[in-house]
Image (cartoon, rainbow, N blue to C red; front, side):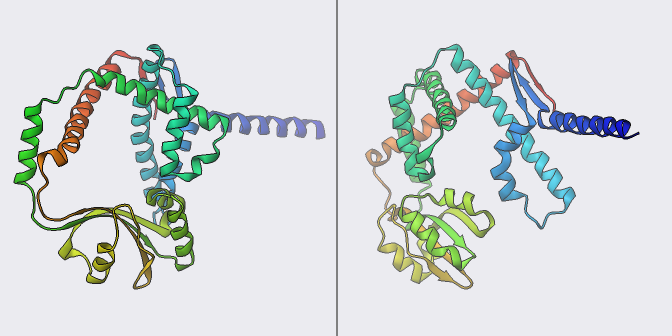
Length: 294
């Protein structure tokens, strides 16, 4: 009898492990020869789950939102996988020198990337391979004639408001115990977005453009003393705190064509490049084997 029970328990454990393994390795999409699993998808989605799957949601609401996040992220992952497959086909490579330079630039945005593991460095290399490939794809395909630049400038003048404006990044902090920690992290180069991701619901992040007349007079006086890129010390507002970075100050006087020429070129280039890439990715999806199971 004891032997029979042991056999039954063994079979149950084996079944449970097998079912868990199936769930863990459930295929959510096949792109060419690449297999995308639910486990990997949930790993990619984890930062979004932390932000949006709040405790105030019912179990049904949380399940629907989780599925929505998965589907939207899966679509992006499929496109990213397609780009990776094409990049390999074209033999795009990234040298150690290129990777180190890229990492140096990334560190300016997120100091946590300083001590990457070997596996994380390789993922960063894969990301750079895709960036290089996209640049290769659009570099010779996009042209911005001088006439288009001038038309874009005239359009900007027509829509220009002769009102001083402030482009700001704002951290709204509800927990006074972490204010100084956040402020010190910002002084050391941490980005507002990185802190928002790290602290979740304790920190709200905004990036807005305000007319001078819309800004509290006390805060306006502080902002007037800042140079672009500088941040305020923590400002107490009611029960919460704010830390503000001045990104850009507009004086209310329209800029000259030469002052905004580079900016206009980049705007037009990005717009055309986005349109070209969307068309190219759609063609890839139409010609490649793609199956989704989510």
